[in-house]
Image (cartoon, one colour):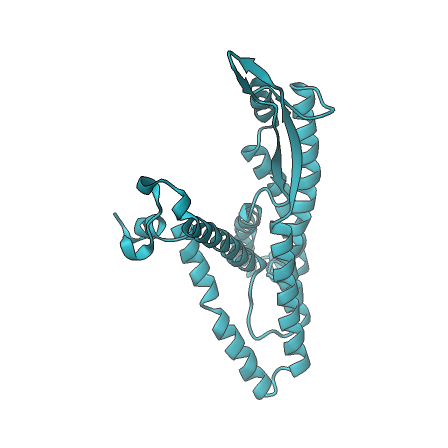
Length: 272
């Protein structure tokens, strides 16, 4: 078994995500030291350095708030009597995240834009039009940011359509004896899920597009001593939130292990 699988077996969170998270976070001290050096050498105004810090703190807070945002769809299950037992009759909900597609739309949009960037860079020496395109297709260019923004919106809906199937979800709820209050089971439930996903998907797509473009726009306005992409910040914050949730779950289980049967108690790390 490789070291990555050992990390997933004995550690917290997904091992591959933790490796990516570590690769992003390890550059943070370098960014801080580089900013301090630019301030000391007079290359960067101290007020601008404070503004950069506040902007990234606000972006991180916005990511935490929106990543935890949910739209809860209530589901009521009908009560059924089988023999002397009663099944169902309880209420639950289906959570729909605001960002249903994660960072995949940003990755796909960036990968697609790399193709015209490569072609324009090859033909820039021969044709004037491609030279203008090559100069515009940079992370701080207007054309690049516009295409990336609309590409993220497109791939957000595209990826959500691949992951979620409203018809299948509505059919599973119907087979389980559940229904959404005020909506008939079946096709109307599927149409309601499609309506919710479309509205939530728009908010999530605009959120991802703004997050991906904000560091580029900020870097074009201010001579920053470093560059941190919105995608990297989103991955770092998302993995940190997942890790914190898993640590909290582990601590709760460890605190209440006395209530579990002796054969099912969770062993501490020292006992493994």
